[in-house]
Length: 265
Image 1 (cartoon, rainbow, N blue to C red):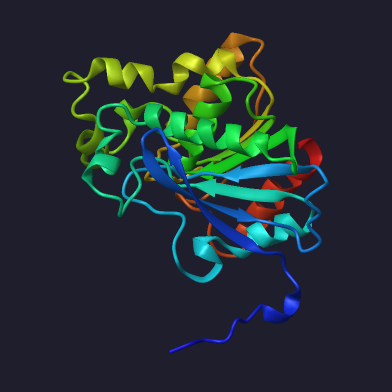
Image 2 (image 1 turned 135 degrees about the vertical axis):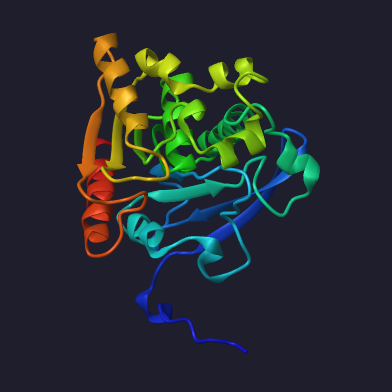
């Protein structure tokens, strides 16, 4: 069966899916371009990241697995890029197992390779690259904004895991083992230890009733940033919302995310 494309007449830009060798593995990426894309012009870039194990962002489906917000940002003059780093699904045991006991570190290395590729493209304004993600993507956004400060100009981190020892046991210990078995892995990827390194503009968003990544994660990070004195970040809470802001309030969320990039990237 073939379904008609419901947005065929909107004149949106192209979506490109590429494959590159990154840290020993073929990795897939997806790029949304503006409809009036000019390869000789410089564009700000938004990296949309998830990066967590057993998830896949780039798929052979409608919009390449992306969403209409990416088209929206492209039509507002941005290029939107996503890369499936090591740990993501459907690429075999070696690819998925590379993150074992070190959630965050190999994923960052792959995303930084993607950033270097982006900045090598003549259409990329290398001074205006932002990053956004939710949940594990919020963890990745915060990781990249603090553990590699200055690489990204603007970040929006939603529902971020900050300290793996405060996350669900059934998930965390599957990939990290127990804290007493892997203290080095937990310490290296605990973002409380990097809060004072934050540079650029970071907006952190959390649902006040989040029962997946409990509110305590981002509140601990805010506390560390305040005590660091020089680490400034912006913070927004959705009262009554759980891990994902759903329903009519989701429109407010996407307006807030978009406006943050419009204002600062």
